[in-house]
Length: 417
Length: 206
Image (cartoon, rainbow over all chains, first blue to last red; front, side):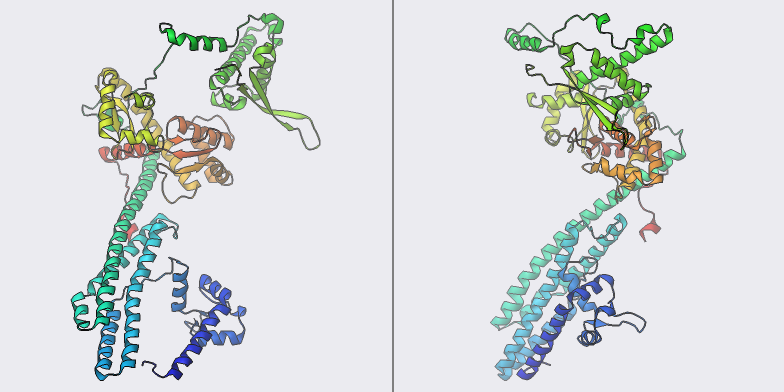
């Protein structure tokens, strides 16, 4: 079983190297096969296919089936690219332990016979098995962390995430059970009287496994937390959907009068708002300076003779009381719009305001009146507002600009503090 | 107390304070000593700090439940009840439109433009949005999708469910007030034994 003959070893070397090279040579087509789940046979020559099958890279699971990657090759790729959908976790510890026991026995036998080269080789194999065992846990832990840190993002729906999380927890339990199979008293016994074995089986393996054990417990804790979070999200989605359905079915539904219960539920104790107001006070002499500055910064009020600058002159022509009243209402609304611009200090779109306030004016009339009002302002007040027209050509052929909307904002004044 | 001036002002104005709306203030409010200080300060105003079950959001309630307070609470409660269905429908609509696998929670970001784009080409989403926008709670008069969506989001911002981090950028962050809404719904459900499940049935689990 052990290749002692250097001829066999070099033969193994040649075959292995050749077959590994095959993987590299066809890397793109093989990777595509990994993603598709089957191999596109037209991508290979007949000879290449034969070689890949002989190298146990490809196989045909069934007469009717297309060629596919062998499971071990798929697993290798999944592990290399951390593809959590396909990555396998191997929690089988019993088999590995058995191998370790056998190797120790073979090693001791060879030493007993004084066959040191064989003993050396057995020790080498034993070291590999020990590393395999530790590596198996490391790979599994890496995969678990990877899934955890990506919030199980490799599956789309919350239900799938919950299932994946539960699957991960089962794997984790198997891994922990596997760790329990390792009996360190047995390992100590196995390595008795031999420094190499003690170092390998006791100090090294024990150290690694105890760190794996604590990693696994940490992962387990986090998996349980994440599952709770998933379940909470799921519960929230269901509550929202079902409550909405209930309210739709019972439009007249009215809950009990909680606000008037003697024991008021805290959730419904939502007080009315209090907005603190302050006014100018003159009793504090030290404030006078800043107050004076504020007053100076106010725009001057100059009495304007309205008749000279009547904006929409047609209002005077209108004799019908009703129309005049509507005209006045429009003017008032436009004035309110200007006041709102002043309050806001920022940009305000005329049409948005119209919609927001649910005013009934036709948008075109609304815009006209805003422009008219703007034109009617005295020059110094006009300078306080910046009017921006949102215009577009009437059509590709017609360069006439149509106003779609107007927005107004207060110009920042240099002297304002 | 001086350092909490702006926070007190926000609380008094009826704001809900959570980790999203004001991280610093929220941290202060989570401190028991600060809670006591603030309650002490608010006592003459007949106010006290209230939080939801999970302490993820704070707001002000009455200290003494006198007649005037009860009246105000009653009208507040009927507003809350009226807003339940439109808010729930909005939550569902956002979840479906954006193809999310879970309901919105505090801290989630919604891009307005993405929401509009996805609704635009889908007749059934478009229809539902149209209905939602004309609900009394949102009260949109417009027929245009863009205006309807803007109005819906603005109203939700005014009601404190959404935060707009930049005034001129159309993306919104869900605040902890959503947690409050869910708590209210759960409370009513439990209290009135409504047939509203929030755990998957046994068959669904298997």
